[in-house]
Each structure stands twice: as structure tokens, then as C-alpha cells.
Image 1: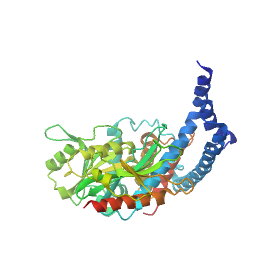
Image 2: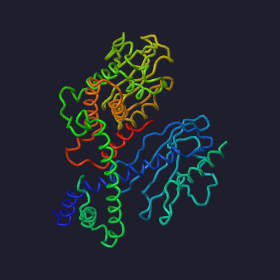
Image 3: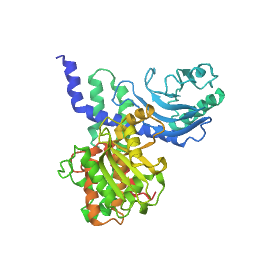
Image 4: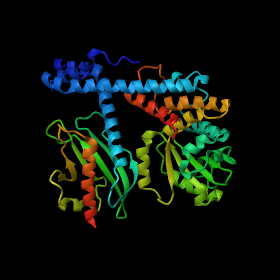
Length: 158
Length: 277
């Protein structure tokens, strides 16, 4: 066994539990913050919010964690789940992006998102995303703003 | 209190990562060390809150020797822990024998009825088989006002979909109207996602409310400080200990170190139980 590899494995045997504990606690608390944002956000425009759904965050400490919360309801008569999430996948530095999206892959209004005139603070690539300022992190505020922008889009559909 | 604050703790992540040669020492100092330090401070806060909750519960349940978490229930033989039927039997016993109706009113809160209306149901059925012998209902309760509550009990069983035809079959067989019939499915928390997936492909006309064993734990804790009889409370106390340790996976307090998430879980259960809501 390669010496460096063995050192890594041996150290991991001792350290992995604690490292996982830290990551698990972080994930759980972030999920709680996101659920609270969904619970407390008042104006959903045409989306009739019903119930919070289970989070589907990455459950293991993978390289690219993705933590989310979901809310179901009706949008112009269509069953719809809106997901807000914090995504570390595909980011160039340590900080994640925040996103809001239709959970349903084939949501009927997904196409409309491509042509909508989004505010310059946000970018659109499959989902509406926002890159938080590392010097001014405020998850609740930023997600509320992101939802407001998403509601602006939903209002524009019909 | 667990010794989670020893000064060498932050080396844990550091050494793991640096031995992999993926991160330079100065990077570690500026990022992960800080994170672990904030973790330790936050964990201390969580543990302090847990101690406070446990203290309150120990005081409230002094007649039983304190909080049930101080006893190890993981080998409690009178309740056959691997059998769904046994968990349902115990729950039904507590529902039937309740002198306050509090347990049922907290679990089946759909109907907005007074707790007193859940005292001593008119009739209860366990493991009822339908005429065609295709379906079996775990629990059906007929209340004094002639309404029914049907409950399917799960401790990890993946067959959730059959709850829909089961519900409708028994409602029809018992000749209850839709207004007089409420369906519940009692699940482990980790089954909630599977349940949501099941809901997406099921008959939207049949309404089934999901409740969890965490809800049962909260309701039992609340009932333990109510005016229930001592005999009822002693069964409930035992059942609660077994639920928290065997179904919710929160070990007894003296049995090794609790993970932060288990500390939070039990704290929240106690907190909900002692809240006035």
C-alpha cells in the first residue's frame, strides 16, 4: 500500500465520524433555514402554496453538496412544487449558488423561464440562480429576494 | 456533558484533508479551523439547551424516576420490537384506555374535536380483514359520535401504496360516509419522502394524512404530564422510551455519546411536549 494512501486512510478512520457530524449538523440546520423561508414568505403571487415537502438534499458528504427545501401547491391549476436550494456543484470558488426552480423536470411553464427578462442580479441556466456576496451573507434575505423575482416571473405567465 | 471541546478537535478535519495533500496549511487555518470552532460553540449551545430540556423533563417525570431516556429500552422484551403488530397493539391499548383523550386529539387533529370526545371509543378493531380477504386494516376506531378513524401503522415497511385501497375497502365495508371517515398513516420520519412519492401516483379522492412516530412521542410526553391514571402513564412511559430509542434511533442518555442531530431531535420532542400550544 502506498505510504501516502495509507496515511490518508488511517487518518480518515479516526476523523471521518467527526467530519461527518459537522457536515450533517450543517446540512440539517441549512434545511431548517430554507424551510423557514418557505413557511414565512407571504406573497407567492399566483402560486397557491399548500404544504412543505421533504427535503432531498444529498445525504452523504459528497464533493458537491446540494441542500434544498420544497413546497407544493397549485400554479394556474397545475400541481407544482417549487424548490429552493443551495448548490455547491459547478461553482468556481468555495461559495455556493442559491437557486429557485420548478421541481418538476417537465413543468409546463419551464419554457417560459428561458425567455423571461430576469433582473440583472440573477442568472438563468435551467434554474434561476443567485451568487451570494461572501462579504454580505444573509440566507433569509437573499432567498426572499429570489422568491420575489420568481413570483414576478409567475405573475407574468398569464 | 460529553467532552467535545478538547483543544485538538480541529485537527480532525485538518489532518484528514492535509494527508490527502489536497489543501495547504494556510488554507486550512483560514477556513476549516474557523468552521470547527464555530461548530464547537454552536454545539455547546445545543447541548446546553438539551440539558435544560432534560432537566425539565426529569422534574416532570420524577414519579417514574425521571426522563425515559435514562433507561435503555433497546432490549425491552414485552414489546416485540421488530413486529409492527406489537407497536400497533400498544398504541391501540393507550388510545382505548385513555382517560383524557389527549393522545388521540393530538394525533388525529384533523377533526378539531375536543379531547374529551376521544375518551373511551365506542369500538376498536385491530387487524381487521375485509370480506374479500385481500386487505387488512391495522387499526380502526369508532368514536361515540359514530365517526371512524382508520390508521395504518408502519415501522419501515415499504408497501405504502396499498393503504389507499385498504382505506376505501373498509370505509365501504363499514358503510361509513366520507365525512365520517378519516384515514391516517403512521410512519417513521424517513418514510415521509416515500409517502410523498406514493401520493403523487395515488387516487387524489382518497385523503390520507401522514403522522409520524415523532408525533406519537410528543403526544405521549404531553399525556404523561396530564391527568391520565398512573397505570396508563406507566404503559405510556415504557412505550415512549421504546419509540424514541428503537424507532426514532435516539439512544439512551447513558449509552454512549449522542450525535448532535439526536440531541436536537430529543430536545425538540421535549420542547414541543412542554409547550402550551
